[in-house]
Image (cartoon, rainbow, N blue to C red; front, side, top):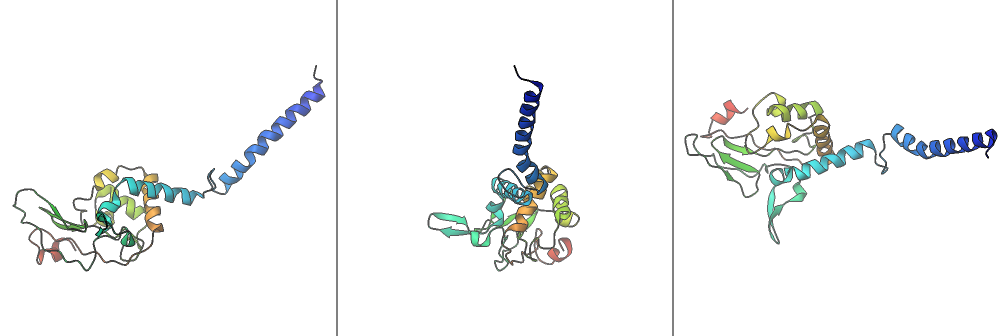
Length: 203
């Protein structure tokens, strides 16, 4: 039969063991780290990379090139958008039957809306270098460039991505801010008919 003193010693030992095992977890939480030793920022960036990957962002925002096994994304220009030196002709007339065509790079698309060019998503000043979380989230929520100006054109599915949680959109932005910057000034959209209309409608 255990004496009260022996029971007290046993209880104190168990408490010490429990708190000792929890101490590293508490210390990690205080430092903003995960159980795998990642910082909270690293975990957020990893989440953003996952979302960008499954969201197919590279399919349009990374220019495609011809590789050994056929067309493939040119990862040396990852997420840099439509190449600024690749000029595209005006799109079809607005009264034509519905249809769409894509450039061989998969970065320019023409349809009844005119010609749209995929944006530079890298943190270069020619891309998202001047953006912050709020601008990015507002853009995804409203479908407006910078969250307030011209509309984001097809085929960008902003209406789907805009349904992400704030935390997920922040993770996507954190990842995009972590990738190598690529200087690439993407052209402005060309409205149906092209010409001078582009300077008055989309600027």
